[in-house]
Length: 183
Length: 236
Image (cartoon, helix red, strand yellow):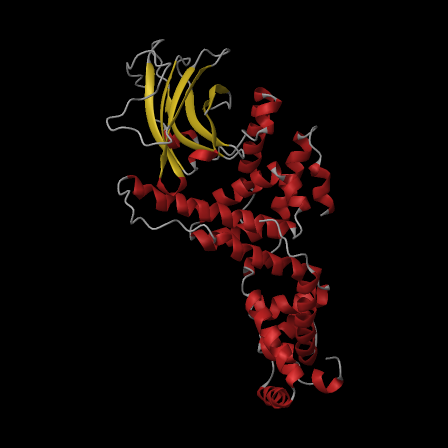
């Protein structure tokens, strides 16, 4: 967060702008590109999405920094919105030739799921590193207790108890978190 | 909830599915007899489901694999927008008219046959069928470049618009892009062309396009060259 605050100043940009883009790319590029690649199924399209995401981040640095969730969550949300908007734009084109009342309405409600997921992500970020790491290994990386224990350098019994407390800590974090998360 | 006998059940670990079969059996036995832990089980199960909403990619760190071409491309775009902002001045930039021109010019170019459709500085692009209600017309001549632009914005179903424009008196040889800008500053390219080297003053080109933007959100239509200079902009 500290980094990003410096960008929220407008004026005297250029050098700082590039540094902002660079730091976002270095820190979040892999995550964004992997996410966009999975959703689009196309590396080239995913790169375009990442590029647009970073440009938006640069243009809306204040928004990104003031977002109640994490910078990572903001970026992933923007990337997902871009992908959804593009898919929708593609879906809409054919209505130009077949514009009838039976044309199904375009889905407009993808935002809610994203908000929820980013709320969970920012709650995860408030956990201690120990708690967060064990959840990431077990849940998101699908590791077995043995594998997670070896990755984290812990006895298997500790992985089990720690995952238990981590989930409880996450529940507390979710409860304390402000409900409003910027798109 | 912190009492040792409850913690033995390790409800969180049970929900996460990391207990051994023996531990599972013990946890289930405790859950059977303990309403408090069953309530916790329900809550943690819900939370467990919410965890699934977070993309696993959210936990990757560092730059993408495969070099920094993507970074360089992004930096070039940002530099382009920055210089355009200087050209356009504060008000347009503040309105967010600067925007994503990620597409290279290749996308919408068709080679400059500036067709003779009159010095179209009035209503744009007549169409065969009557235009639907809500259709908006706008036109403008840029005092600096002399370029003129007439735009007809036609509402379509599902929150998008069709655009018909006539543009002319643009200096020959320029690569032009057509943009529609929303009130919120979102900008979409909906066409582009290359002005022929022998373009005749007073003649116009007519182009159609579509944009995913509600007609009520449309703020302006503009022609921008590949240097990012706005050749003509007309508020709608």
